Image 1 (tube, helix red, strand yellow):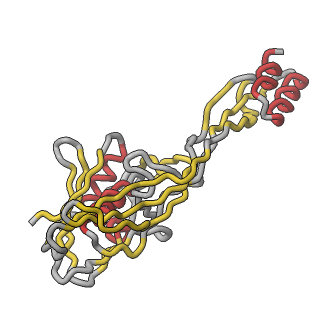
Image 2 (image 1 turned 90 degrees about the horizontal axis):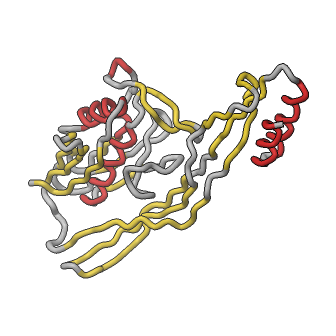
Length: 257
């Protein structure tokens, strides 16, 4: 019988292929009682030989292209299905920065050899994991098995943001670009501290609530590259000095002199 399911929008572009590959590697998994699943081990290695392509992923506070980019959406979607099924979560890590497909603290990042999402079938009977990207482009994981929980018991999860930190704007010199040229770089993200509440209901009445994870997402500044290449060393020097000040009005004035 169908037990619990969760879905996120699969989007498009190159990362869609990585979502499809990851889902296919997890689809059909059976966990016997007491058996654990490492999502990273089940879906890695992330290379062309194993069906992955280059797509955007987080690295050192920036979005860069790497093989398997987007695989964390697969682990995140499965994480939420696991939460609703109340399977035992052994390892779970937040992303370095916020993601846009789930609320804060509902994500589960994986990175080969570094981060993993691991969970265990803590029930007395086997569970079956089904994964798909349906005709509506929804990536879905469904947990099938015998629900051994008390009749009338349901769970919900509430994301709570505790603190936010707005990203800053940082000016940097680009000596290879023409004097005064402007180019935006970086992947600006707001920093956030969050936690996830598990709320248990019995016959529709709240019975308990507890914090099950705590997540810190770093901010990432917007970088503006200002060109300083010029045959006039004095003008270039004035612009470089203005960049050091990080004052946008002073930079503009130096460029326009």
